[in-house]
Image (cartoon, rainbow, N blue to C red; front, side, top):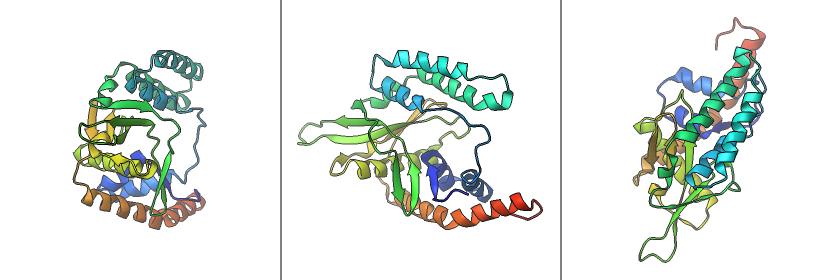
Length: 241
């Protein structure tokens, strides 16, 4: 059983916006389940996304080396190779997609030292947004800032509702890690890799921020009981969930 409430940002957004109680429970359950096939992935896709958005010339060699590394891990066993092939596909999508538009109207800088997580109502959310966007508007003394992230789940495409929740969560993250900076909603952006769409945070956020806080509290409230029931089912599969 996972000891502390923890979700990735993508799973958090899905939990907050799905109407399925079964799916919400399943999201929590997956964090209590051990990984069946260990997989050595150091998150190079984040660096590739940042490199392409920031027009880093060295990103091409990173893409090539990552593809070689992933292909070397393919075993020929379908189930074990499934995740490797998925990440390989992800890297290839990043290579050919027009991610440069993520930085439209702003200057993009790769910031791998930004904190990976934020804590909301006791829930740790893994954000991992490592692209910092900034711009200097005429007449303003200080720069405006935001963060950008790539959403790269083919099974969870962002719709209008989930995209707004995602970008507002990025806005909250930016406010927490860039203390005293002038955070602008339209500089908090998520790029949906498999849909090839770019989303920016809306200016009206009160309802969505309430949703984010309420969702975090609900996940924490349900965390232990979902884990216990999952453990009970492992011991006695006849027990209802």
